[in-house]
Image 1: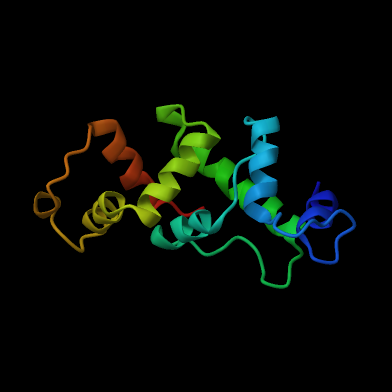
Image 2: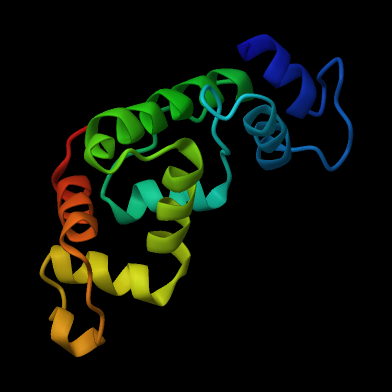
Length: 141
């Protein structure tokens, strides 16, 4: 898996095609097998950062190794923290995008970590969603 992914997205890869990067390649994998693969894009990494989680790979890792390590982290998020909500990889991706790119998601995370009052944001969460966000912010994956 690691070698094949690198061969597709690395500019010196055997099957490299200009314009096919980590996001598109991982999206194809997720379309093929959504229970096994998840999208990896910049919002994924931004979501990790919002949660205070370090990237799960070294900058020197090849793209395939990076994807496998990101996928392991996303599986932990889906299977451990999101288990009560029965999250699938699509929902994990949507969640990370929401907290990284959408004002509502950013504000909720700020509220959970104590940077702003939720009442100031005008946002109301259902109990299960709030519990998931709180668990996610406090998780050490």
